Every structure is written in C-alpha cells, then in structure tokens.
Length: 157
Image (cartoon, rainbow, N blue to C red; front, top):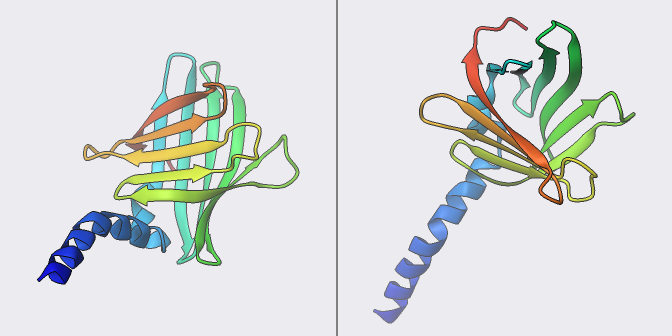
C-alpha cells in the first residue's frame, strides 16, 4: 500500500514535467508559430513569418520597417530538430554564421531558447495565448531586452 501511494505521488509530481519534455521532442508541437505575425507601433513595424519546410525544419524571417518605409533590420530564422534537440537559429547581417539557441523548456504555447555564451540576446521566449496572439521576449544580461506583442496577419511571404 505504501509503495502504491508513493508511486501515485511521484506520478502527480513529475507528470507535468514529462508532458512538457514530450512537447519538446518534435516540431509538431510548435505548429502554432506557423504563419505571419505583425507588431506595429508609431515608429516601427515588426513582421515575423514561419513556414514548415519538413518535419524537422521550420524556416522564417523577421523584418523591421521604420514608419518612413525604410527597412531597418532583417533576420533569417530556423527552427530545427537535430540530435534529439530543438534549436532556434538566427542569421543576422552582423555575424557570418547563424547564432544557435537551444530550446531549454517548453509547454503548451510557450518556448524558451537560450545561448548564455552569446553577447545579446541570451534568451528568446515565445508565448502564444488563447486569444491567438504571440509575445516574444528577447533578453540579455543586465536587464537588457525588449518584448514584442504580435497579432496574426495575412501578410504574404
């Protein structure tokens, strides 16, 4: 009887952890990120777009346009499932090679990628809420960072 209670206790405690890690094993659990997203302010418009290339690769881009219409930034993005881990790869003009961030935690509608050896950012977190909106928190050391709130868009790639 004691052993049964102990087993039930362990199941209750560790079941959420098991579920979270199961979500992280495949890109299928991240399908909510697919599509076009836009975040607008009076000074800038941020666009992000993701599409499925294969079961192990999602490709995307991030683009920033100033209110004047001038493009002020572009990143080529990828989510890849390699060697049993999921990575967020960002290719920016300042670096010759993509910057890799490893998925360190996930749950339904939440992704947290990290690369603590990178100067900035060191952490990228995506959150998808029940209203169908996307928030992206980009953070580094010393309280550096920013948060963007995206709405789904009909943007054409």
